[in-house]
Image: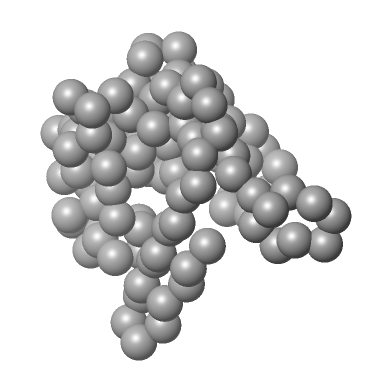
Length: 108
């Protein structure tokens, strides 16, 4: 399925080790109330929400959607990999992801 013109192909996934999956997994930051988000950031340093929401957990002055904001996200992602909280799979795999928000769902 990796021939030219095909829509999907396997990839090398980056996931938490099995023993940490329940700590790293996170819903979309949009689904948290402001209080619940702050609680998650304060009490779970392993949550991926720490990576995708750097403006709430560190001193990021760049507005969302700017290159400075995305650089902060990348620094958080690299830190999670360096700590061993995220690991790249040794082989390419087929993965399906589904996210829902309200009445809308996205699959990829």
